[in-house]
Length: 201
Image (cartoon, rainbow, N blue to C red; front, side, top):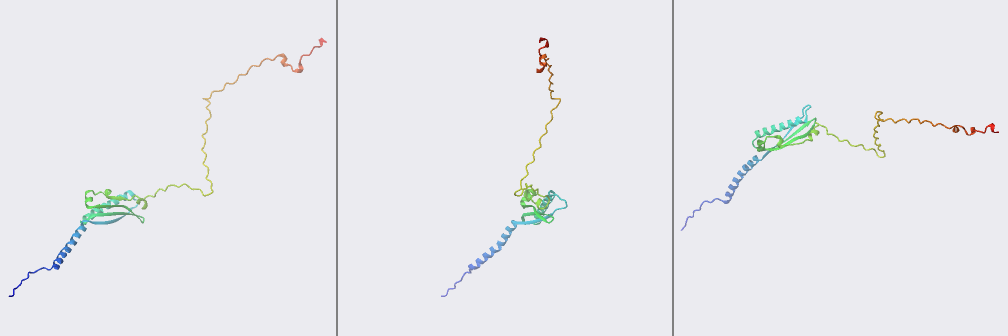
């Protein structure tokens, strides 16, 4: 007696694994692309040239205005950008130096669109671009070997003022002393002493 045996259709394990991997491979690029869009950062470099007889303060204000305009327009044009890094460079007579740089997110810029809050400034660019010359500190001159240093100059003495005749008291003159009368004997010299008269002889 022959019995008919019916087999149920079965799905091979290899086919199941292949379908599962294909589904995962189809979903993975979409997930990666969405994450990349959410964290996309754009780097922007902008250069501005100095105008004729422009001061560094006005040049810096123009750099800030250029940075704000660039951030606003870039966020508006590309919705996929979530963060911007902007660098403003200055040019003057062939010299190039950074003026300011900043990093700001879309949410941060929408809350506080102020360049001064996000920017980093480079004050040394004022000298690198030739707006001002650095002040050099004078160095004392060193005399050559063997040469004597000059002696320091003498300080001039303050002249003394002559005494004021009005304030100076006059010295009283000495009064002449009266001469004492001399005796007749004092008037005679030793040779003129009285001699005995002839009448006594």
